[in-house]
Image (cartoon, rainbow, N blue to C red; front, side, top):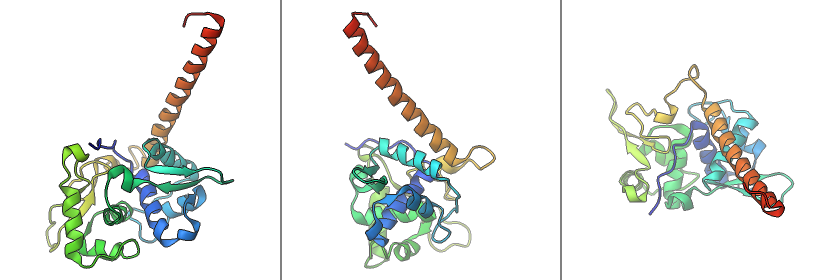
Length: 224
């Protein structure tokens, strides 16, 4: 049984999408440093929406993803490097990871757009093969963690339906996810990500302090 993931912020999905993309396109420099990861998140091409995240904000998103094992930090290097673990965590094949990455990087898209957009990540034989993987991702049962994509309603004047990932909540027919619905005037996605990571770090620090206190209490015979 696969537990449903907590909703991911826009910046967290952008980080995952960039890691999947760069694993295939710049394999020589993968896993990515924080600087390279930030550049990938702020890239002006093949990104929708465009964002301007700082390294601190990207680090906060990475920390949140690390706590869910969606991102892995390489050890032993002078500069920390990061890789994704999305396929193993979600229990989906590489073809599905490629589709999810394209949706995380460029928002809602048609099957034809996804086939073109994932060409460097995975070469699908035809559009029907893209549809087959999307249908499978959209039909995941609750015990598998629930649907990972949703087929959006066709908008007036459109001939093809679009798809959107569900990692930030169930998207509306305009492609906006529940975790992305707030505009900059309400609260920034990076602020949400930073706060979540900060809370997680504080919880870890409190747990560590409690462990140290209990150890000292036992050594001095003081009841906690």
